Image 1: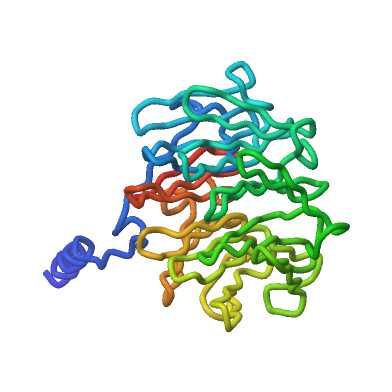
Image 2: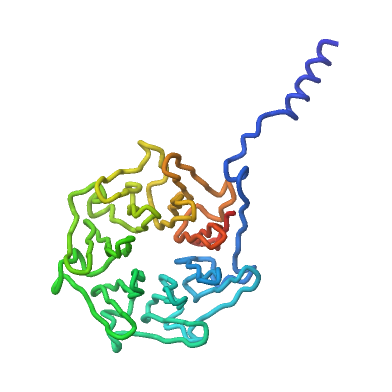
Length: 318
């Protein structure tokens, strides 16, 4: 009789155990898309969301477009400069810009255009692209930073301006339209008139630990993702380091974006992380990610987060 009571207690306890599932499982849902769904390649390099909430995904084999129901692929056959696409952005006119190994391509929904050195680019291999508050495009190449305002091309190098390096791994545009450029051993910023090189702040952690990603949040705080030292933020007056000492477990940062609630999202080599200003959260394949190595992060108009992985497609979290 005594043994039967113990068994009954254990059985009841099993059904009423506390729920130790992750915050992700409790708050959201994960969906993964791969080549089986229509993605052109599972190796993702960049993601952008246009004015119609369509997702544009850059890969090694071309670009995939996803409107929430239908997938479409664009390659050199459609007009892309090269199928190896490093970056995609959407400008203020809803024109899509693609940085490839064969130049820059733009697509307005009807017509493709390609730009190379013949048009004014410093070099045809594009590291990253950003559009500023005046809708001027900034292209990072291995031979300088080229700008294009839809009429005039201009290139900035260490020979003709105060930029730290000829190539930027990331370009950030803050709410005051100041441009930020990352390099191996520091960052440069340009307010339209003067350049400043920053090499003595916490954002700088040595040549090995370069700044790979940048983003500006809704309060004009700049966020810098480094190669092995976590994240640094700058509010215009103070620099703050975020790492394992204060809640961030993943230190290899590849991409950053900001959602509609000003929550920062980070794609890393170890999973995804988010920061609401107080609490860090971490997400991995155990929570629903397709792969822990994340190359790209984007947020759409429904505040759905899109994570582009190194080899296993795209995971969406809502």
